[in-house]
Every structure is written in C-alpha cells, then in structure tokens.
Amino acid sequence: MTQTTTQAESRTEATAAASGANATERFQRDKKVASQVSQERVSTLATELITAAHDVIRRHGVTYDEYNALKAWLIRVGQDGEWPLFLDVWLEHVLEEVVNSDREGTKGSIEGPYYVPDAPELGSDATLPSREDEKGTPLLFQGQVRDLQGNGIPAAKVEIWHADDDGYYSQFAPGIPEWNLRGTVTTDEQGGFRIHTIQPAPYQIPTDGACGALIAAAGWHAWRPAHLHLKVSAPGFQLITTQLYFSGGEYVGDDIAQAVKPELVLEPRDGQVTYDFVLDPA
Ligand code: MBD
Ligand code: FE
Image (cartoon, rainbow, N blue to C red; front, side, top):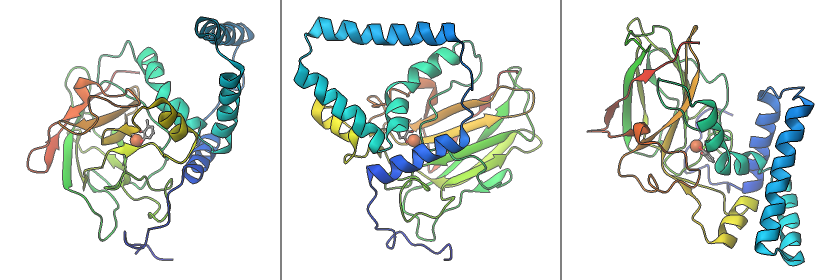
C-alpha cells in the first residue's frame, strides 16, 4: 500500500466500536498507569464516589428499571471500547482545571482520546501530512513559544493533531493515512513556528455506540466545536496540553466536553492566525 489513499476511497464506515477499540488500545499501550495509588487515597475517593451515587439514588427514587438500564449501559460502554471517550468527554475538563490551577502561562485544556505520541518531526516551518485531495479551508497557524518573562524558547516541541474536514482523526477512523494531520514541530532560534494545515470540522461523538445512546436518551447534542489539539513542551518547562478553537464556530459556546476557555479561541484572518504559547517553569 502506498500513501495515495484519496478521500473518495476512504468511504469505509467509521463505527463507534472501531474507534473505541483503537482509543482503548492506545490508552493501554501509551499511558503509564501508576502501579500504586495509596490505600488511603483509594478508600477516600472510592467511598465519596460511591456515596455520591447513593445520594442520587435516594434523592431521585431510582427504580429497578432505571438501575438495570444503567447496568446494561455500563456493560455496553466497555463492549464498545468507549471508556476513554466517556471519561474524556464528561470528566476530564474538571481534572484539567484542578491539575493546572496554579499555572501562569497558556491555559490548558483536555487531551481527549485521540493523541498519538511520536508524530513525524516537521521542523519549524511545517506542513502537516495530508492527502493529495485533502478537503477543507487552508490554515496557516503561526506563533512563538515563550517563557513567563517573554523570552522565546528555541527548540521547543509543538505537537499538533486535529480532525479532518469531515471531523475524523487519523488512526481512529478507517481509511485515513497513518499520520494525516498530525505532526511534531520544533521552534526556531527565536521560539517561532509556522504550521500549514486545514481548518478542522466540528467533532460529533459517534452516534452508534454507548456514548451516542446516552446522548440520544438524554436529548443532548453530540458535538464538540472545531479544535486543534496541542502539547507544547521544552526542557526546563512544564508541558502544557491544550486546544484552540475558532471564533464564531458552531458549538464554541456549547461544547459537550466543556473544554473551551475564552483565552483559547482563535480569530483567523485571510486563512492565517497567530497564537503564542507561554510555558511555566518546571
Ligand atoms: C475529541 O476529538 C475530543 O477532543 C475529546 C475531548 C473527546 C472526544 C473527541
Ligand atoms: Fe479532539
């Protein structure tokens, strides 16, 4: 197989179960899960979580029908591989808020389920890998990585990944070349970078899996606004995981994952936008 997959050829259906399985596998492969969380911490957190559930059952007079619907749904989340999706959509934003509360630099946002480490190295003037007929509005995203004093940081790493014009991520939806719209950019002597890509489309939570079933049953919408994912890092600084959004875009004010912050909204002009990252010291 060559890398000449065209968008017309990549019509294989994207399914919740397939993207869920990929996200579950990536998590199990890449994330270092602490081998030991202290017994005291496990007991405190598990007790409070379970007690919160008891309170909900009492307060709302939950029935056996509702209890069994919950059981069936929880089983299905696992079967569809959608635990990463569920947790990142409905819980991660509060974790991010707690963990990054004392940072002074660029605001963080959630990582989500679709990060892949070790994307191709593209230098400081980068064009993200894309298909010959990649759809979407071209975007030149440029800026500088700085410290809290305003000094540029040379050789900082800017990892970027985002959905295509149909809202799909490479390695999680079928028929997209492996590293499509993913890359590792390195800042120049002044801390500057330029990234040529396309504007992503809003992302819809898969409708055919457990998370989609919850959304439909509750009458919610299933959308995240269009976004760029980023991890920015340099030796001697704290890595920041964040996202950038597009002013005026659909769902910017109504993200199902509640991960938008006003500081993270871009306003491109004539297909270009500048955004500078500020890193907190390690
Ligand atoms: C995404 O693209 C995403 O960024 C998050 C947080 C959850 C689901 C899909
Ligand atoms: Fe995303």
